[in-house]
Length: 458
Image (cartoon, rainbow, N blue to C red; front, side, top):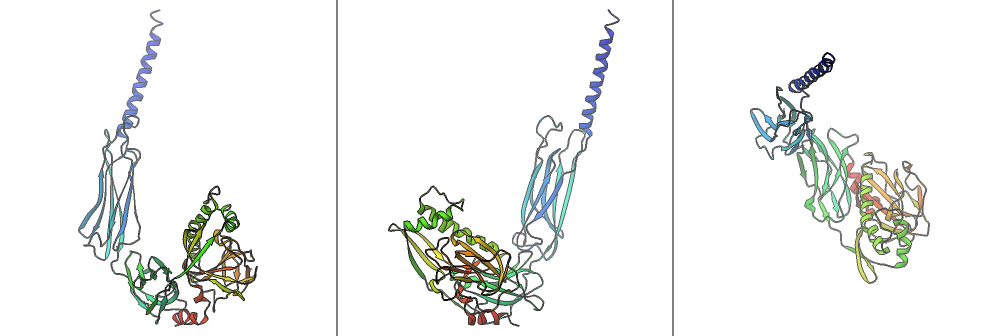
């Protein structure tokens, strides 16, 4: 019995020794392991420094955690902190206690507006991360640097064309020259920008732009030619010799239940934004307001695909034998059951002829969209180049497809009463860089010659 009892004790002793050795091994591994270095990534919202560039740094050390992070800007002997943080180290035993801070972001603004001591040349954005220490484990410091050019002088800007006459809600063209550092240029009219393109066969830095003057902008001082570099340095200057305000135009539209019953369901059934269980007048107001704005935003997005090359020539074509039923920039008051329920602005021409009259392509171009477009009903959007688009709406049928090249006057569909149309007609709308402008100008060959062709001729 005494001899036999020694074997289990020996086994227990061996197992205990093995467990102790394993435990010491784990403790030694935890004590001496180094782990990964912190990672640091620097990002900026511009590729250069000018008046104000936002700089950020992302710090990451998911295993051992961070203790100190810093972000700073340096030029010459001058160093300025942009931000810093210090964290309490977590437990060096990964299965016990807090692991510490694994990730953080520091951000700041760099530029002449914030650091007036900056000079043109180059500067350094420096981000520093310190890893948490542990039992017998040293700390680790990682430094990342990003060198960026400093540009504080705006690009050169020079107007080359002359005699620019603008009208509220109208459009035009201007030819100009920019310096080598310009990356964006064009015309700013209030909050709307029409961006320029290289002048075909032009000299170094020569640009042109078709520009839009919004129908609701009446301040001439807000219409400026501009040029901007990649650091955000910007120069603006006036160029219009004459600016004419647009006389107000109004209309009053009475909404009937019969009209609502005809136009609302076909649109609401295709529009998830509309609550079809609500009264028809409520659905109509969503379509006339929210969906109207969404359609204009969609067309503005389409305009970004416009080719810089002109595809059009000559005056735009009006639907044959048509009469003008509603004008551009007409402020409409909508009345239902004797009460005013809405106000919207009509931004095209309503042209009426016989029912299902042939609708011509206003000018040569490429079809960007052809199909259902909420309040416009069946519609065709054509890119004529240089940021110039046309929309033919309320069609009863469409005879062209997206991507198709069309000729000036080619039949693209038939007039109709789809969408929010009160009766059979064509809604013709013209856009310049996504902004609705007066179509009557583009139907006038003399206006095109005086305001577009001569401005872009060398």
